[in-house]
Structure formats: structure tokens, C-alpha cells
Amino acid sequence: MNHTDDTPADPLERAHLLRRVHTAVLSGQPAPRAPRAVVSESWQRSLAASVDPERWEPPVTFGSDQLCDVRAAHPLAECVPLLRRTLLDAADGTTHIMIVTDADGNILWREGHRDVCRDADRVWLAEGTRWAESSIGTNAMGTTLATGLPVQIHSAEHLVRRYHSWTCAASPVHDPETGRLLGAIDLSGPLHTMHPALPALVSAAATLVESELRERMTRRDEQLRERNLHALHALQGEPAALLSSSGRVIAAEPGDLALPERVELDRPDGALLLSGREARIEPLDDGYLLRAPSPASKTRAPTLR
Image (cartoon, rainbow, N blue to C red):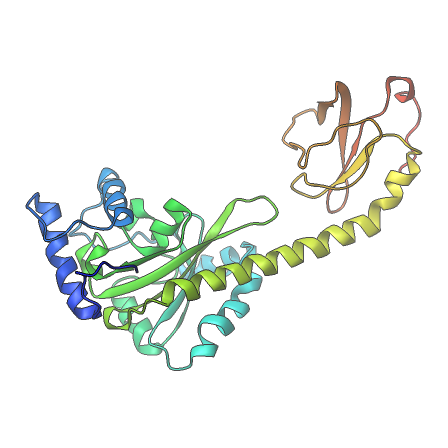
């Protein structure tokens, strides 16, 4: 967390100041200082969502009997061991817990210091609960998902008073295939464990995860090309392209066809226009084949296999 010259460097002193700010701002009284902009904006969003600062229980989205399947289906599942090595194993004895959420703020994984996990259970900072701003107010996970930026929330910067004894830093993770938000990575712990390096550590971990996802995407692209490049060659010059499962163009014989970087796949009839020419999308095992035959060749039998 960045702080000005008049902000105490000691985490406990800073927490005391932040509690005074929290009380004053929410009661409409003059505050000893203004909250940081990211915090003030988050408080406004949270209050607009009817979050009560005196309420402290986040909703439970997934029961223990559901978590296994939900985790297995999530794109970050294969990256949890990497995060464990980066955030926990490399800092043996740390008094933090590592948390991974989905894009809706639901905690899917929580690992770390045994005592901190026990304290977290007492305040429902647990797997299966939802920590979006709209559910439990300002917190690092929910706020990083709302803003798309790394953030650290310390003590009374949390809107809900129950979490004023906690500090947390989180960073969003995006899918390199589609750019969509996948979830958040978070380090949380007792407020005395606040350290200015925490946001950088969590951001570095998110970058590592996105790099790992990008490498996996590259390997999938190469496998798709190897298995299906013959489909392009078999069309004997007819404009066509291999598309990933999300519609990214990964190989093409464009001819006079202007291809976008990504093709919209959500078309009920499978047809679209490219350069004024009708093109069609045909499914492959792990992607798609886009074909744009010239009008003269429309009646020619396809030779894809």
C-alpha cells in the first residue's frame, strides 16, 4: 500500500488511523484524512449494493460436496501447484494464507498457515464463500475483480468491521486466450503482517499464472495445427483458416480474404460474411475450420479428409 508522509508506517498505528477514518466517513463526520481513492470508490460501490458494514457473513455459494467438481472445471486448477510453490513453499513459516477465487469472487482454494486458516474459518474466509464487493464489501479479492487492478486492503479499509483485523493483497488473472477475467489471487493474514512488498508478490504470481496459461495455449495451438493443417492444404487454395476453440485465427490460407484476429463463433446458422463473401465455420475436434469458397466453387465437393 502506498502511503503519504503523514501515514504511519507501522501496521498497527496505521490500522488505528484507518479505523478513525472509517468511523468518521461512514457517520458523515470530518475524518482525520480521506480514504485512498480505490478504497473510497469501493465503499461507494459496496454501499450502493446494500452491504451493511456491521454484517460480517459472506454468502456460501458452493457446499463442500460441490467444490471438487467446480475446481476441476476451473481454468486455474492446473496452476494451483505453481501458486503454492510461489506464495507458500518459498516463504515457509509465513503467517498468510493463499486464496484463489473465480471471476465472481467465490473462494475455490485456500491454503496456508494453520493458525491463520483457523482464524479465517471464524470469519467465513473459507472455500465456497463469495467475496465479491456486492456480497461482503471492500476487500482485496472483491475490489481487484471490480477494478481489474492489483490492490491491497488493510484493516479498516475493509468496509465490514469484522475484517478490520485483517490485511490482504490481491491481483486479477486474465485468460490469454479470450482476455476474460478468470479470478483473483490473494494473500491474506493478520493486520500486523502487512508488508509493502505483498502487492508486488501477488502481482508477480498472477503474471506467472498468465504466462503458464499462455504456454498451454501455445501448445494447444500447435497441436491443432499439426492435426488439421492438412484440411487447409486439401482445399487447394480456397481461402480458409484454422480457429481455436474461442475463434482465434491460428493458421490460414487467406488468399484475397481479410481475416480478423478472432472470428465470432456465436452464430446460429454458422454463417458469416468476410470481405463481402459468405464464409462457414465447421467444427473440428479441438477447434474450427473456417471456409470462404468463391461463388464459382460453392458446388465443389469438399475434400477435407
